[in-house]
Amino acid sequence: MSSETKKSILIIDDSEFDCNLLKGYLEKKNFNVTTIQDGTKWSETIKEGNFDLIILDILMPKISGLEVLKLIRKEFNPIKLPVIMLSAMSEDSDVVELLELGANDYIIKPANFKVLQSRVNTHLRIAELNKDSLRKRELEAVQAMIVTYNHEINNPLATAVGVLDRIDGKVDKSTVDLLERSLFRIRDIVRKIEGVTIEKELPIDDYVDEVKMIKLK
Amino acid sequence: MVDDQKKSPMDVDAFLQNFQGAEDLIEMIVEEFIKTYPDLVKQIESALKDREPQLLQISAHTLKGAVSNFKAGPTTDIAFELEKIGRSGELSDESLDDANKLFIQLQSEIEKLIPEIKKLATTAARSA
Image 1 (cartoon, rainbow over the protein chains, first blue to last red):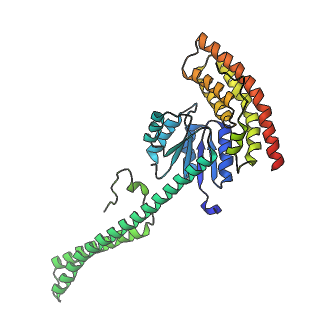
Image 2: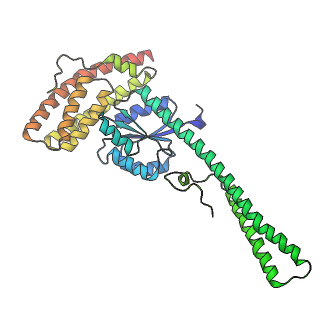
């Protein structure tokens, strides 16, 4: 893995020992790793870094990992930011609760390093595939918009051309107004198309959480 | 009460298996543990002295997490028992008495564990 493609992982665990151990292992596996022991600082840390995945401990003194998970999920969906919980729990009902709250996966402590690495890689790969899929859908959306706008251009343009034919040397004010309105409409639509082509990346949030995929202006 | 009399302090094979391919981390985690555990033990002691179940739960849980990385079964089990007492939310005279006995067992197990993990660190450093 080259330095450009290194993925960034944030570990949130009140245990400095566990943080350092996991950080040491994951850095050996070529990840960029940041650790914080104070779960309440998750928000500012995430804003400062551009993390691809979070490893989150459950039992912490100031705030529980489940609370942090709930707060993370208010801002980041599981595709955008995968979260793997570090759990000492082993009951099925506890695991179900974790997953229902939006955890992508969980690892029972003490972490088996190979399992940890495998799950981290799996969720990073899933996130990457989802991003690819979103990019394709984004492209399809742009194409659909272009088709729609082209159609919208054709109608006023046809009107403008028809009016121009009718002018034929004798220009009255209402005819000029009609022509002007039609041409302004064309100009507006062309600007919209410009806007779409300038914006290289549409916000991913527009595609998820049941938000309508395209907002036609 | 945890029966720890006949158990070895850690499962060396299981520990080494987990660190296969990452042997150079062994020395680091042993050093980290030796640096970290006295504070955790002190926190447990304070929690018992001040009858603070939540502190007992968290500090015992953290110690349990750390020693479980060494596959230190007896120490992990004792720390877990202390964590459970803390999780119950109150330290009655009876549960405090149990917890104090467990705490003595815990210190004794850690004393047995430390030389074992130091040996592992030395071996790992030599073969690095």
